[in-house]
Image (cartoon, rainbow, N blue to C red; front, side, top):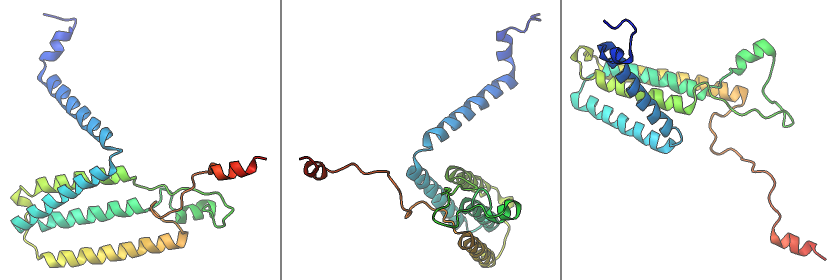
Length: 199
């Protein structure tokens, strides 16, 4: 009997083999996520393909509307977190007084999201994959009149986005970077300017 607990004994344990396998799979998954971080366009194309596959599955089966409704509510929650600042100016005003720049001479503070773009994409991808798997279990196919769910989701979406847009207007922030002016620093002097400056 080996009391010392040698290295060979640990490998014989079935739970140890399962832990090693799950750890190896987790490391591969994390490696894939790390490699995909700078590939923004390809990540969103991948998510679009998964979304299309899910939509086709629901359309072909003509069911699982409750899962789709729950997925829509979750997407709305993620979207609001994606469009919201990390520190809510309304709460910050109550605690510390106004902190956002109100004049052109005030310090510029970049917009920091509550939910970063990568986490937004990753959460959406996981949600669509999870919902797709749920469509293979008939227990989740609850018969409902789907137009009512769609109407209720649209009312919820419009009212929530209206509130979010009013919040953006009130505190003067824009959660998107495209269309904003970018500063690249001083421009190098052209050759025409240097040739005329010489005596």
